[in-house]
Every structure is written in structure tokens, then in C-alpha cells.
Length: 175
Image 1: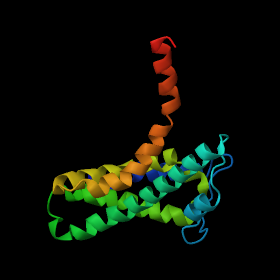
Image 2 (image 1 turned 90 degrees about the vertical axis):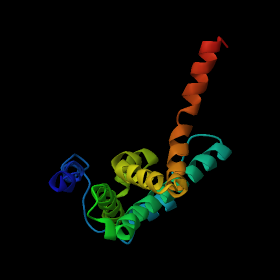
Image 3 (image 1 turned 90 degrees about the horizontal axis):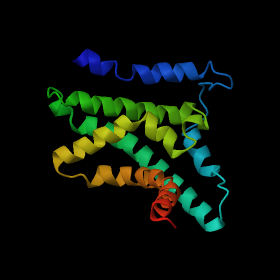
Image 4 (image 1 turned 180 degrees about the horizontal axis):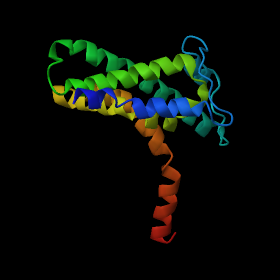
């Protein structure tokens, strides 16, 4: 069981290694303290919408990035707090979340913006962090903290579906 959980990050690491060999690949060298996250904050996506919608989307992008980085740190905190309980079977879940959290924080130092360019990028790659935090919160009977870090990413992803859902509903209603 320990071996299976220990190799869980292997597909992610292989994927990361393969990125550098693609045309326009991703070089893995140190870019500065949280350089890619800082770049994401400093170079906001310029959405082709009216000013108020562009600001709303950019604000939600920043909130989801903050939620993601907070989730990465919280995953490490969970494994630290639960250290007396490492003999329990669910400790592998905490370690998995911590490994992905550490990988996320490490990539913020090395990875260029490609892995951080939008909420879908880090939401997909590091979804185990979110799952671990949610399960931890439910187990402790306090889901508010994991939901607080999950909410910005969830809302931002949901905003992508508003326009298509509205068109579908209008089509179904015959309007």
C-alpha cells in the first residue's frame, strides 16, 4: 500500500519531464522566488470583453490563484498536524496531498507561466490537493476551510459555463 501511494506522483513527474522536450518546451530552471505566481499576478490575462467583465474575470483569476496556493500550503499543514497519526491508513492520503502541495510550491519557483496560465491548468494538475483537503475537512467535521480555498477556483470554472448554459436554456425555451 505504501509503495502504491509513494509512486502516485510519478505520472505527474513524467508528464512534467516530457514537457521540456516538446517544441517550445518548458525549461526547468530557477526563475525566482514564486516567479511564476508573481508573473501571473503582474501580467493579468487581457480578456476581450467590456471593462467590468474583464475586471471581474481578472479578479476571479487572482482569487483562484490565491486559493490554489493556499490549498498547497494547507496540504503541507495537514500532514504536519497529523504526524502523530501516521500509522492510520488515511495518512497516505495526507502524504499524497502534501506531495502535490510541495510540488505546486516548488513549481512556482521553477516553472514558467505555462503551468499557471489559467485556473484550468493548476486545477487539473493539482486536483489531488483539493480532494485531500475536502476529505480532511469532512472527516474533522469542519469543511469551511477547504471549501474556502476551493470556492474561488470552482466559481471561476463555473463562470466559463454561464454563457453556453444560457444559450442552451434559451434554445430549449424557444427564445
